[in-house]
Image (cartoon, rainbow, N blue to C red; front, side, top):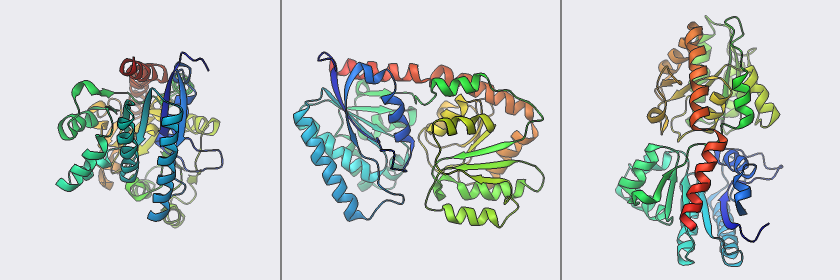
Length: 370
């Protein structure tokens, strides 16, 4: 590694091959490591992936966090990074990463804090106490990175970040490989309809609304449903499916990635993400870049960035009827489904491509540490 490269310490998700815990941050970090970003900086990696789902008991999580913070201090002192990037997921992650941020400020190392999802915003609205705690740990960062206007507004108005220290970094999961799939996608009115759910199989991901909507739809439409992911309600979902009309048309795929993920994107034509809360989900960008039409909840950054019935079908969260109607609209109107697929593909290609977004990220880091 060249001595002239700036050193960047990243605290994110870098699971080993044996760790079957996946998520949006892990996907983003993997793409980052395989991109031009890794050639621009000397990267120092600290994995903060959770060890199980559901998460382990508090005492175990606290112990693991203590070990990571200890290693973080060691790396910060010994490796002397020029900048630190902290990916943040939920509440426990914010406490841990915020603590790292304050330590970094004591060591006079610039800190970029990068939250994902919007559950923290929702929790901050519940009480003044929650807001102050969340604000304190976010202020461990010098710079606030975000994927869209929802977080940008929160960082400026609620946390108090200077607008010059806030930067929107577009999602970079529209990879070159996936865009090639979208570019070559064929749309045929007679092709079988294959729905895809991709992500954590959890109640708050709207998986039960999805299954119940599909049960109702199966009375009038023929389609297949693919569920790719794992989660704490997986057994309940399987039981619901196997005792319903979806028994012979639903397929559980576990976590998939690489060539298997590319193949399922080639096979499917509609992605359904009825989450109760999101930031800007990787699965949505990945599917759109692969030429799928997307049915997604109006949560987080999504309604600010995507137009209903232009780039996606936007539905109300926690609303089975809205979800059913959204899917049925694409079943009934092939031309609309095709137009949404093509428009969505062009939109993410122009705004969320791997090359473009990572270039913005690289420039942001370089401008702050020069």
